[in-house]
Length: 136
Image (cartoon, rainbow, N blue to C red):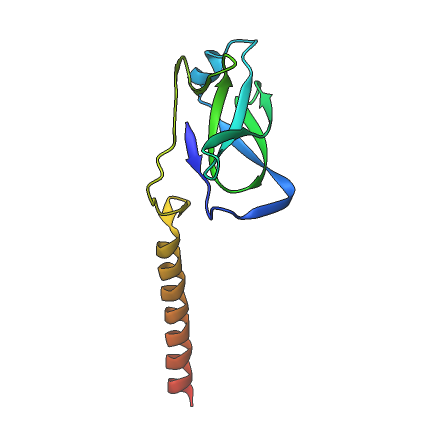
């Protein structure tokens, strides 16, 4: 379970919460002593870096305090040399893909949002022009 938060590099002061909502099935499969960590991938060092992480088991949420957007992953702390990703009852080692995936807001890419906003502004502008043309 990893997430690409965009725009990469956006910074926050004060910190913001990254809330990862688990399904009921995932939540029910959690062991009481499991230690979770929301970590971001540091592209400079090639390592996963921990954030301050809290678990709200009543709401089935894992919450990480983040200072910037990056690639984040929900992980279960394992042995000293291995950190694993939580996938409910299963775990697997993970390295993020570094392909140029376009960012998305509400399921739409940023470019799509820009086009939608420009189209709305064009319709509003054309409406005002038509109204003023016919009334003067």
